[in-house]
Length: 181
Image (cartoon, rainbow, N blue to C red):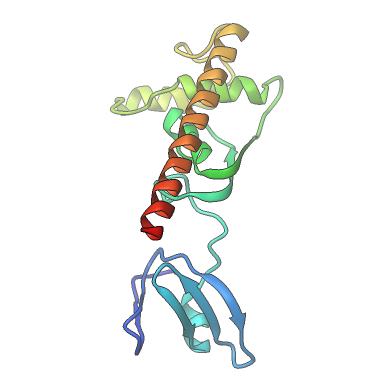
């Protein structure tokens, strides 16, 4: 959905911004039938043309709190530990990171630097210096200095991912148990 316009239906279902629905049928008149957490609805063709967008990708911040089957993370610019942790803990079955490298950089090295970075409450001048293209090729002063440190950071990521998976499995078990009572 692109904007805050809402669609109210005769069955008192409301379709609103950031709702995620599964398309279950596409009709000749351009309308679609969708199902979501609140039920199923047939959306008129005109509404579909102007308001509906495919929800196949979203930012890591918009993805906060959601669980998907497979999460894909694209790291194509500097990020910090929050920018890696959130999207890499959303996938129920798998989480994959795709890292864009330049020159003699390695994907593991860039992920290690990102995990060790914490940009919260940093002054603008310090942040500017970190993003300066001339400094980008230099190892971050607070970043990993050895492969052992990178290995340790990657181990921490894997442990965090496993904790997230275990937490989601437990939540799903609790929901299933609640439905069966």
